[in-house]
Image 1 (cartoon, rainbow, N blue to C red):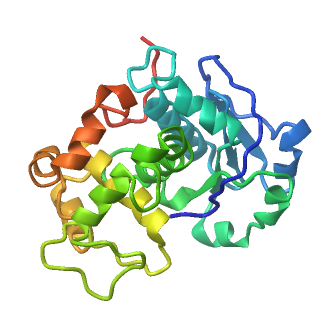
Image 2: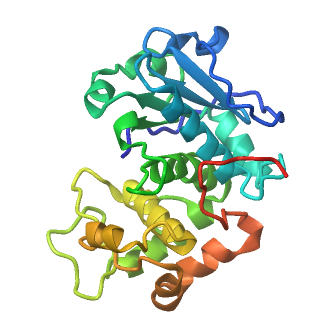
Image 3: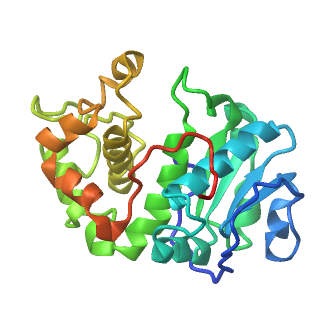
Length: 271
C-alpha cells in the first residue's frame, strides 16, 4: 500500500541511540505538523512512527520493532547500512499508522506535506497482525519505506525505481517484458503479475523488491499464504527465487548492500 511517497529533501537528525520503543506524545518543533492528526509517536534510530489516538499501542509498538529489526537485522544495536539510515533520516521518513483503513482515508496528508514531510508510508492497525497466524502487513509496509526512500536513493543505479536500473531490469524479466503501465494480460512466462492499475512503474519496482526479499526470507511459503498470492507472485520461497530469478537473488544476497538476511519476528533484543 503506497500512501505518501516523495522526492522531498530535508535535513534530519540521525539518532544513534538504541530504540526503547517508548510511546510518547508527538514532539513539537518541526514535527508539530503531525500533532493535529496523530497522538502517538516512537523514534526508531531517527525514523518516526506516528499513530492516531485510536491506534492500539501494541500495534504501533510492533511496527516500530519490525522497523528496528529491518534496519538492525543482526540486532547489535547499530543499523546495518548507515548510509540507508542516513538517507531515511535526511528525507524525514516516517510511518503513519491509523486504526482502520477507513480512518487512514480520512487523514489529510496535506497538513504535513505543506510542512515538508512527504516521505511517508501508511499502514492501519487492522492489517497489523503479529503472531504468525495470518500474514502481517508490517513486513511489507515497513520494507516499502526502507527500500523506496532509502535503498532507491542511496543506490540509484542499482535499486532506483525507474527504467534502466538493475532492479528495473530484474522487474522486466519477472513480468515477461517492459511495461510502463500494468498490462491487461501478462505473458505466460511471467512470475510477477501484479495487477493494480494504480501502481505505476516506480510502484511496481517497490512491490517486486518486496516480494523477492520476503520470499527469500521465508515470509510467503505457508500453504495458505501461497494460495493468497498465487495470482501475482509465483516464487514463494528462497529456492524458487534463486532458481528462477537469479539476478534479483544475487542483488538481495550481495553483502555490500546489507539487506536483511533474517525475517523480523517482532522481537528486538540487542545482543
